[in-house]
Amino acid sequence: MSKTVEDITINYEEDGLLLVKELDKCILSKGAWTTILFRYQNWNKTKGEYGNDVFTIRRYQKRQGEYIPKSKFNISSVEQAKKIVEALKGWI
Image (tube, rainbow, N blue to C red; front, side, top):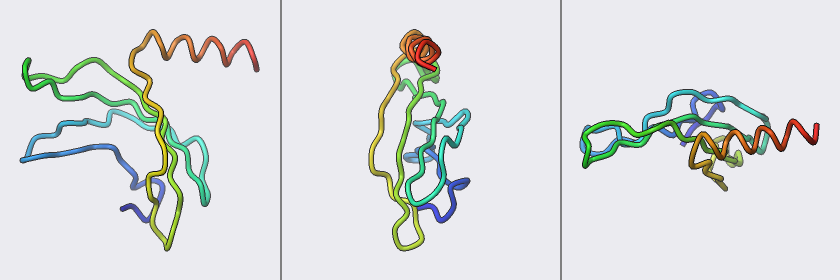
């Protein structure tokens, strides 16, 4: 668990291999409830390389001094991300 928002990561390693590689993050909100947008890649065991960029929005709740994951929404492709951006631009 992370004690600060800046320390939160989605990097995931197993047997010395980084299976989820965080490329970037944008902290959308801070506080008792924190929202972070991550850009990352998954390791493809078959191809032996990282896949295309994907995105996820994750919410964390601070409890007893540590941030605990509560929910997530995965954006599965650049095309889906573009549609979300266009919808938000139209609304804002």
